[in-house]
Length: 611
Image 1 (spheres, rainbow, N blue to C red):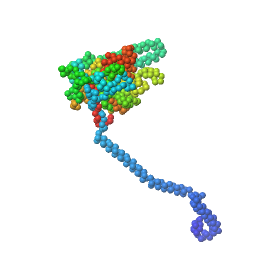
Image 2: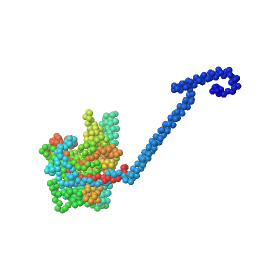
Image 3: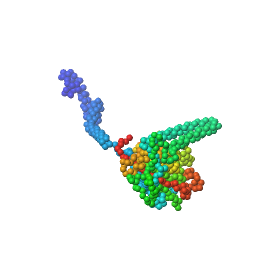
Image 4: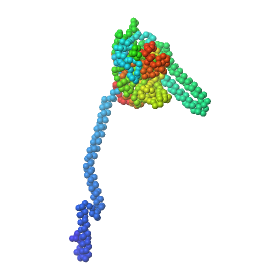
């Protein structure tokens, strides 16, 4: 710089000469300052420190440049990775789309999944001798929970005691039913369905009247708080009206029952229409020995054949009864089915069922080893003199029947009133219907379950009255795919729908083409409707892996506990049910099953989309 004119740049010789005096001193100062700054800068850079007079703007520019460089370096390193991840995600989505498309196309090509939604096919026709081939004879005492006063015996002992028999009877005219042409059958079944709907209207009006009376009673109670004298009169008036309503309702039900069976003959129904020819008389379910899959009944140690010189039609029955023993408990029968079921249509044709004080017969489904986890369904259960059919379901928690579609049944629910409080023992008099299937529900009786009761044939669908009508047909449909368990009872046999009768009559046909498939939609409304499965308050897996049981118990935890209430006459002489049964009264001669047949159907598996 000195050579070029120092700090001021290049100077001419003239300028140097003119300022020669000043130049020397200024140049020396500037040179010293510049050298000092340069030295400090070099030392600072060597020590990694910024010099005192540092150019901050330049440093920021350099830092930004460094950051930009780092970012470029990061982008150069990460951009390929991002691209790879994006490519992989896109590829996975594309593959999933292809799989979904392939699944859809495959499903459309293969068709819908297989489900048990087809028509019913016979899987067991338990008729005559063949009935025993579907069961094991349980031998031993009753379970601790039931605690019945009987000793179940094996097949050989039962034969020796004469408590299992096969009886072939000639069907006389008085035991035949009226058979109509197909067209008139349709008309009659339409009339029966109309009767069901009229009966539902009666029940609806009855509930409305009871609700109105209840409201009036509440108004009367409020008024009584102001006037005690008026309260007495109001209660009397209200009670009188309530009694009148109940009497009217009972008369309606009684008239309904009379309309069903107006003829003297238990198998005759209404008077035939003048527009149709008179009905023919036929056996309800005659034997078909020549073209049947069942074993022809032949005389043996348990078979009784009535003389039949005129070659009249016959019906074969299985008799299950009991006999006294020196030890006290009666010898009795308990048949346990071989096959396990998770669905099905179960039908029993009875001409007589055990009835009377101390009896406790049942036709039911259970899995005893996994009770109540796999549930229990009581199809027919009699207790002492009870005369109205009931169907009970027993399960674990979370199975309630408070979502039954309105108008889907002609029955009602059993009640649970007076349940003792677990802590205080004070009875809870709150009125409740037994709609919880949980066996330990605290607001119901122990193991009461959810219990549907018949109203349409109230007082005539079980026990002694049923036997007086010549028996009846019970049916239970367990159909989890279609979301329900439904139950019917038909008595007398002249009231059995044609489709159901034809299904039972043809169940043993060798030629499958001649068999009639039962169609429950043609049978009218059931008396019991239990919603189960998806979309209900009772998952379908509460009931599974169950087998059929037919048994005849005495006393025990049900019949015995009700003995003092149901059998007051016997209670005066015998203080316990066991004492009564041990006395071997003549009444117990009516304690026997007379079974025409048990028929089990299952729906065919078909391809169908889920609804």
